[in-house]
Length: 495
Ligand code: NAP
Ligand code: MG
Image (tube, rainbow, N blue to C red):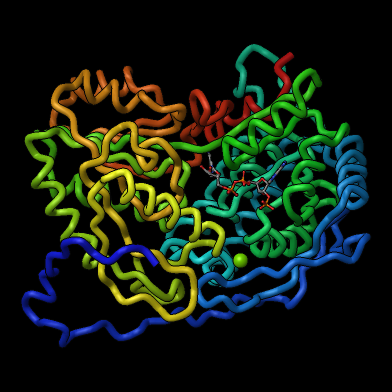
């Protein structure tokens, strides 16, 4: 377990009531309608993996096995691509955009109908708080299908004056942090453009993907249009390297992204890479500090910090650094960490034991390199992979915790004096996915957003997403965009 709290101010509640008052549990009770076993979804049917291999999916909130998930091998991936190719050459490739749009719209509506069930399944499989899967992941996934349903019959506006054509068959691999949402980000634009798909969800979070396959059946989506091959790393490699895929899209770590790019170099395949991040969240001394503190907390503790664009490096102007640190220390004492299914929970479970270990290793490196650790002293449930919300002050640019993506609830706090120093420190990273700027000055926001090498820059807010708004990175955070008109361009040939 991580080292104990160095200094812990009492929360306002504790100051007034001591330990007398506690919230009652408020568990979400909707039935997630889980099956004990999930097979592959190929050619419109659930099929057993050819080698008969399954892997367990664990609830990280209590370490209980939820289901067995099929592991696809090369033969299964071949079958998925054969089905996708047939659908691309046949029914889906020939269908008008107007008709395709109706299917996508139907998927969005059916997902809305089953929103609560999907939210509970997502929370149980991945560990995120139910209030996030209920209010963010599921509605946002539906919004992506709705938005792209609207595009399907208006593709002449994607590249005005030019003709756009689908790539044909697309291979996609996604991570575990937003299992359903990343699925929607990948599927919806590819479908709107008229492509067919073979997709692999992440090993620890395949359930909502395979539940969505039930919706594809309910929506009568033609067989082979979307094929879901669950599995581990080798399944992902088979999906990315398959000769039938004319385009591949990957979201995951920079490390695996590089392996894929190396394997595909010299081929004709088009690629989109959405990789890691180490975003700077920059607070100037004229910012409304209480508002900024809420943005900082959301920026790093949303989804336990398992967010590629998490504001994991806080850069605070020196004159307000002490005040901001005090406010943050107090604020983390009232974050409720625990049962992801409890509607009051702010910070749920870390997605896997493996990820917990990685976070802990990096936190230990922070202590070893001399940064000051501040952790919430909240009670943690006896079972499950929970991590205390963690702040590090006194961090310098050379510290490992300031350079590497932690992908957990850990914030590194650095300071700066001038605007130029803030820009230099923010850009001094191999990544370039996102950034935040907190200031009262409009001109400074414009200057910062021009100078920051990041795909997304939020001003006086953080972690705001919309299907109409393109998302993606610079440098080692990858290339290509998802969302908006720009995202559609990545799923077509412009002729
Ligand atoms: P990961 O280890 O790279 O895994 C991502 C996906 O790739 C998983 O489905 C994984 O399968 C699969 N995979 C593993 N080895 C592979 C290989 N050799 N070839 C093809 N696929 C392979 O990343 P992660 O730990 O799941 O996710 C966290 C990372 O994703 C973070 O770095 C985060 O920043 C990034 N991310 C980026 C964005 C963005 O939009 N830029 C969004 C979300 C997350 P297994 O699950 O079986 O390992
Ligand atoms: Mg799981």
